[in-house]
Length: 425
Image (tube, rainbow, N blue to C red):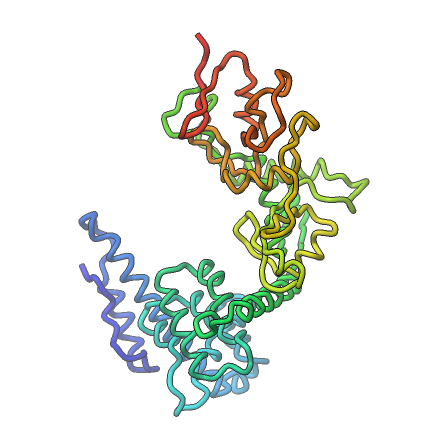
């Protein structure tokens, strides 16, 4: 069984190498069983070969664009020509042409870009390449070519270890590779994120179709923050597992059969729509997203703010969203707020909740994966028995475990690994 596609080391040339590629694929045997330890290596090599082919396709596409093949074919542009040749969608073809022309040298004398070299060797994917191209094109206009190339090479190296989404997050601060002043890097990152937000807003769409079977289906594209709020609500209604594998029914509840999670999410979405507060849509949303940022960034509206969903937004957009959306800022290095309320308040405050998020990421029950953002705060010492509403006495519990901790049929114990439950005998 072949372990590599027999690709030539140089880029495929039209009319001379494509047939050899097809012949190599014909010789490749992937139908028979192989030793288990070889699967990982074979998959990795096939992926590298696919990436090399994609790199060759983009290089050929850039050449076709320079040759103005669309004009000769009576097509409006190269993207339309590509869509017809490959029977791919117009948007996908436009992205491919854009990436191809950005990766191609400006002239025959210009050296090949590091990203194009990495794609040609199979070290990175087209998705990685698109992230790198976008990041380098977003660098400050006055940056010298040597610095731009240094940033690009750094991102190529990181692309060999990160997936495209992780690389995109890291690339926002790519300027730090050549810029020592953190304030300058922060300001640039903020501008990059603002550009992303503007592009995201321009791409926002919603289409709804009525089907003949009594259902409606649709497709939507929204910016990251409203998407995070929707995801938070849907996930809170379709919670993940509540305990470690093999845990007792006291800890995890009754066992459930294999679930269709897409169906569960659909049911949750339908329930959410049925309970929308249509009489007061102008008020805050039910889901609260916690945002962490430095006080100076908030005051000056520069840099980036981190969401507890893992996404980031610009500090300027945060100030806008905070006027009406369900966003709660956790400002670092700012003026402190009283977090211990003693017996003066029955319920924990949102400020206490934000502070507690620094100590917990999930439900406090042992093995429960439900994120902190979906949990309720429980008094370690019951309020009815004289307990205090103090931060040190707060415990995040998901709805299931919060009900269980108040269930008299069970007793609980707080240990180093979290809260464990046992049925009383």
